[in-house]
Length: 198
Image (cartoon, rainbow, N blue to C red; front, side, top):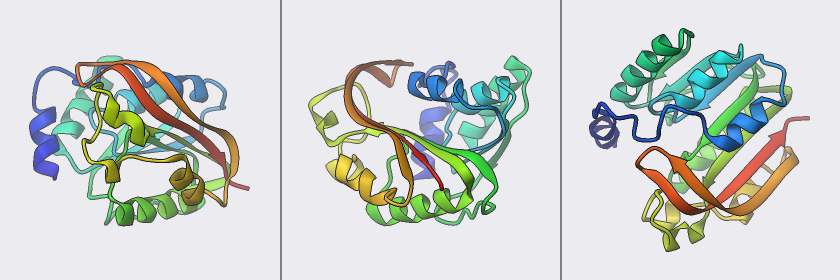
C-alpha cells in the first residue's frame, strides 16, 4: 500500500493542496498550542499549519514520498515538524503525552482502524482532544475523493463506538464543498468529530 501512496505523492503537485483542512484549522484556532500528533499525514499540509501556530508536531505516515514533500513544505514555511515513516500497525505513540491527535481522511480497514483508535486515545493527555474528519459512507454518491470501498468509509455509529470513552464536543455528518487540491474537490459527505479525554 505504501507503493500506491509513494506513487501518488511523487508528483510535484501537492495533490491535497498546501493549505490546512478547514475543519482542522478552525479547531486548532480554539486550542492553546502544545504537543500534537498527526496520523496518516501524507504531504504535510496540516502538520505544517499546526507548527506555524506554535504546536510541537509529530507526524507519521508510511509514505517516504509524503515525508519528503512534508519536509519541503515545512522548509518553505520556515517551521519544524518531526515526521517519521512507519506503518500505523507498528507505530506505538507515547502514552498520555499529546494535547491533540489528528486523523484527517485516514481511511483504514476495520481491524487497523480499531487498533489506531485505541493508540490515539492512549496517546492523549487528560483533557487532550481527538480531531477527526473523514468521508461518510454516502461519499460513494460523490466524485470528490475518498475510497471507492464502502468498508473503508465511516458511519456515525462506527465513530461513536470507536470513541465511546471520550466526551463528545463535536459530532456531525455534513455535506460540504471540498476544495483541497486536485484530489479533494466538490460536494462531499463527511463526518466531523472532536472528542475530549477525561
